[in-house]
Length: 215
Image (cartoon, rainbow, N blue to C red; front, side):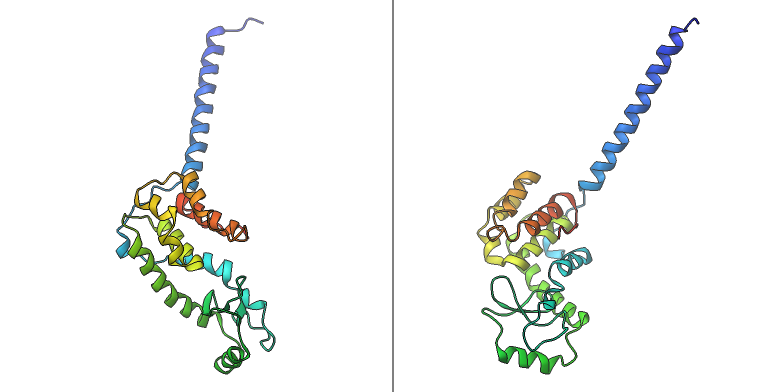
């Protein structure tokens, strides 16, 4: 059989072009799925998003299942957090130090049928107003929504004093936003490894607009 070399050559070129287009399309999809070119805004006009609230609920919304003696089947009830501080609802600090019998009695009086998710969400949103203001007071550059959310979650979990003294804040304010650098900055605050997943998730949220929760 005689092979038409011109046909083979043109077919090969056509195949290479098609493959290149497919690869380019895949790369672009990966880019737009994991990178963010989201518009940045002045932080004074920003608030925590619904995506962040879902993220926080996933991390802290069921802690009350580890209920204290005297509180039964109260998902959003009182609990002692990993640092041994009395907490309620969705990460709301009652006070430093463990919950007391008085705390338990007061909680049962206030929520005889258990604290509901709606109750806990109301308090969370009130807490986030203060946290948002802490971020706004310290960040001097425009941010995208996901970047703002990541810093809000960090402050909600770690406290504003940790942000104020962090390299993370310095890098954000200097616009040093390389993803690997930002991740290293977040990972400086893992409480001896206990919060590595949350810090990594915050870094992914900040750099890639990814609100996936690792737990």
